[in-house]
Image 1: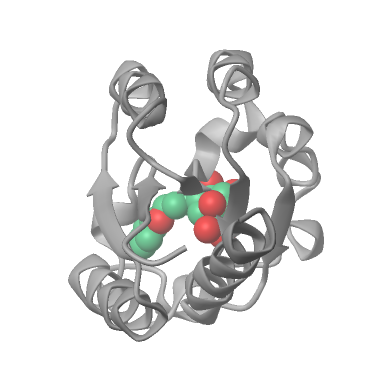
Image 2: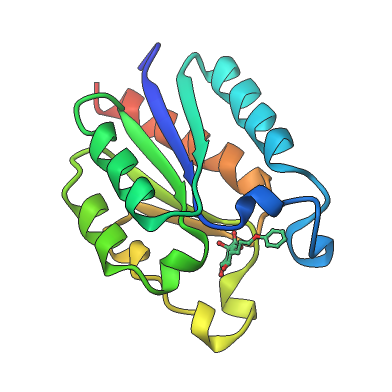
Amino acid sequence: MANALIMVLNGPNLNLLGAREPEVYGTGTLDDLETLCAETAEGLGIGIEFRQSNLEGELISWIHEARGRAAGLVINPAAYSHTSIAIMDALAALDIPVIEVHLSNIHKRESFRHHSYVSGAADGVICGLGFAGYRLALIALSDILEEDQ
Ligand code: CA2
């Protein structure tokens, strides 16, 4: 779907990308990730809004904002994945495709990261592929939106 808007939402502490824990999350910064998403979107002929918040309520308000505005949503809820029924409920109320992304392979890490509430409201889940996961999520959403036309 040409010119479709995809929201790309990032949860708490992802503003620290590149500054800490490079062995887990790589050396790229959040700005680098936004650039990758913007370049991918341009190649696909879609638009993105890329945002990050450390606040659960702000992420939920952005999910509400996506209703009626965005054609699809990519979300890395970060640690809220493992705790937030509120984010899951907000996503479940959306009628657009949602892809959950994690930079790291959450199943290879501590057991408290193995469960994501958000996955129950996502159409697809990508984890463990670093920044490429966001690129693949945008490609998948673009394909889904083309199929739905
Ligand atoms: O792998 C992911 O993308 C995570 O969503 C990242 C979250 C973590 O709680 C999830 O279990 C998996 C943590 C984001 C914090 O990001 C940082 C980046 C650099 C330095 C410190 C934290």
